[in-house]
Amino acid sequence: MTDAPGPTSSGTNDQRAGDRPARDRSRGSAPRKRKPRAQTYIHRNRRVQIPTGYMAVGLITSAHGLRGDVKIELHTDFPERFAPDTVLYLDVALTEMTLEAARPHQSGMLIKFAGVDDRTEAETLRGQWLFIPEEAAQTLEEDTYFVHDIVGLTVETAEGRVLGQVSDVLFTGANEVYIVQSQDDPPREILLPAIADVIQRVDLAAGRMIVTPLPGLLDE
Image 1: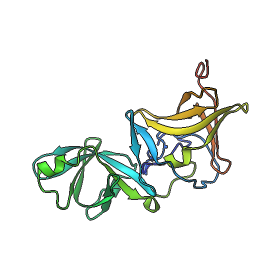
Image 2: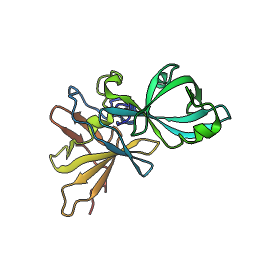
Image 3: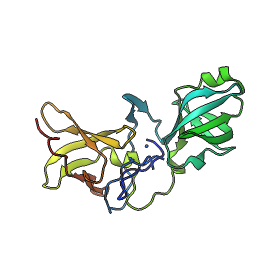
Image 4: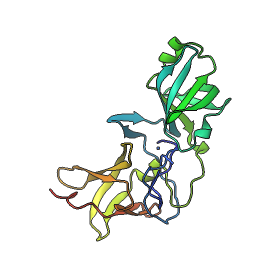
């Protein structure tokens, strides 16, 4: 997933659930036991493929200027990752790309890769994702989780009703939304906003998430 952690007690993300944890972090005190990580998540209605053993830290959105710079949409709460001489991995081919320069720009970054020296070359990178090896993920604060910690959890209400399993995390901007595949026949998707009022507890050791759905959310 992304190089962000998942929900925490503060109600923000590292994302803040992909080195980005979930943005609105839930309350949870269980030890963080790592699970097999998900290979996809949804970003702006597009399914993003994450190579096994890697995490997304940024999306190249456009070329900038004439000298090969590109604009990066951050998918990490650690922008210091984008430092000169850092090696990142480009798209599912995992092409090694060395950062030559980087600087903040609006809400993201402007970066230049070694060997990308004009706008034409930079344009070929548009829409591609940047990854880091999973072992390079940042150490998270207590009660903070990576997206791949969240995907696959069984979701239950405080009363013990099993709603289904988290299948994906949708990044909306204001907060993440957990997509839960229900146990109904036929199954349906339940969308849970990753906010503290809804996500009551995350127990990774038990593989479950305790929630209080918003009124009307579970109505047929």
